[in-house]
Length: 282
Image (cartoon, rainbow, N blue to C red):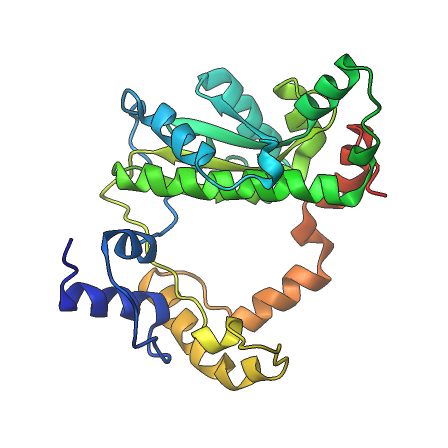
């Protein structure tokens, strides 16, 4: 598929703003689709197309999985009452009465880092799943489910659907696990609202930092990001103004996220919850 020059320029402008842009992108339909990604938080009241969920899961299962252990699962919540319960549970952890994109989505997908099958199979065969006591097992399942979900999100967008990832599901990790009956050695790493985007409220492509902020060659350069902060702040401000959002700086957001316990919203209890689920994190 040919990606036209005006499309290339528009996508790079939206992704980087006035910052330095990469000049040697290998353009194709997949790259264009990925650079077009934006979070969607306003959905039409329509069910997912027939076969859409299965397509997303097939894409998810095509992601890399450590040692082919397949340590992830997906709970697709479409029942309105359960979505409402989950939405209200999470809303209580943030300063709002309702999170509309959770309840209004066609489906609330709960992505589960899941070592429960590994534990069950090991016990059924007379073994002791001692390796699951270690931090790497927790991390392995978390990485697996993240790779799977990213593949699923790309599949969803290729079908004209919109998605938004929901790290906020970890704010009430224990309650969410109870509502969907999670077994030991599993936890919801994050959620994903998916549905038909409302064209009257289009999402915007949020800018990212210039590539030298995140791309290092051979050795990590800890100081280099500082020379690109001014340009990224300008791109962020332009985006927020174009969306009629409140003015705040990226560095201010970083500061708040690392110093305010309000940002945690309950995630400070996550370790206790996953340990209760069986992960010793040794």
